[in-house]
Image (tube, rainbow, N blue to C red):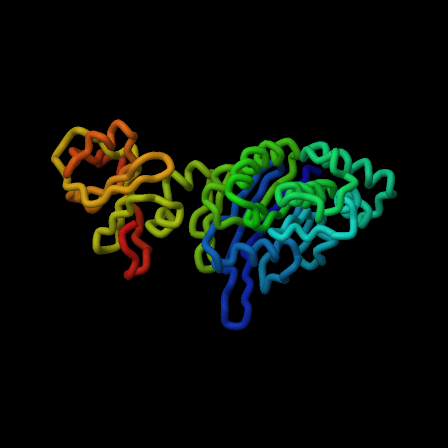
Length: 328
């Protein structure tokens, strides 16, 4: 019999008193696939992960791991690997013993558990550090030990809750590069909870965006980031131009929709230097439009910019932004 997906969570609901933290959340993660559960702080994404892990019991809904119904099982019986933002390493154990802990808990003899631990330590590039204790490791090394500990269980599903949030930006950028390749080599399904759009783009094959306890868009990562379903999703994902129309619809202006040097002259109202160049905001008939310019283009901009927007490239989406939110 063919096993089911690494994760099949169906119609999960979870309340804390009067607060509905998770509302009808359904998630599927195939073996070898990484799904990023993305949303702002307080949207319910960590609660959804805790329901999958068994750390919180959902009020209703079903959780299956590898085709096995684990809804009523405690965390230790679900056979999932867990990585939290604080890593939760045992301070008194060596790196090797930390990583071997999962296999030992599952009944493996010490030599077997150590062999499995050494295999994944090699995979994450920490073989030379197996005798150290966590206090002797950098933040990035601790993160990789926590990941190795989860991998050593050989669980079909890995759950990661904001795993890079405690690291500095340079180290986060370095680890984002290697983790996606590592996930694919391991072959387990991965559910990663994050509020960081760059992390989701770098690591995930698919993305589910959460807002106020609900999944508001779910699909292939590229599709979600290039075609947001609503104005709120676009603004949350960092779109520069969400033009509200004073009604139920908003226009999304992707960068490739702007044609510079043609059309009517639009007054420039703001200029800002960024890490990758300069942005300018112009007054276009459709609304204020912000563009990223190359150094050459920025040098040619005066008090106005000739600009045409390609109507066929504009995206029309429901306007679900709060009434007091300014145009993004």
